[in-house]
Length: 216
Image (spheres, rainbow, N blue to C red):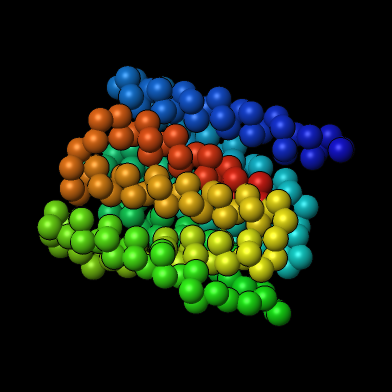
């Protein structure tokens, strides 16, 4: 293992996890100044993990994941001020999911499992039904967002099944954690408040992004 790979796979992930703990702790304790620094720092370190990866084949995968992480960083900043920028955060993360969809889509000769889509569709419809009464004018945007994240998770699962390997497993695990994080966030905001919701949201979100970055 050369120095760059050691930094990418050990030093930067360790730094990201430390920053993630600081971001999660500061959110739970109301330490806003710490949170405002630690949350974007965590995602920036995760972006560096993906940026230092050697370009895979096809090289577009790295570009798409990096672009998705940058959109996520924008979403992180927006969601630190949810009363003002929640919708902007929603758009930023929707863009991230769409970029991940293109990253995870089947390549030449890879199959697609329509049956694998079914559990994601069911979960997405159940989530929308739970949230619908509290969405107001956001019903359509949230429905589109749910469809995007379900498609992203499905394609990550599909890619792992048909391609295999640790990198596709990393992307699949990251996609599932991202799905959990967004589901808890949506339920807490639009349906019923959950105790320590932010701990669960950030505690799954940051590992999700790190796993996706390590899949490059």
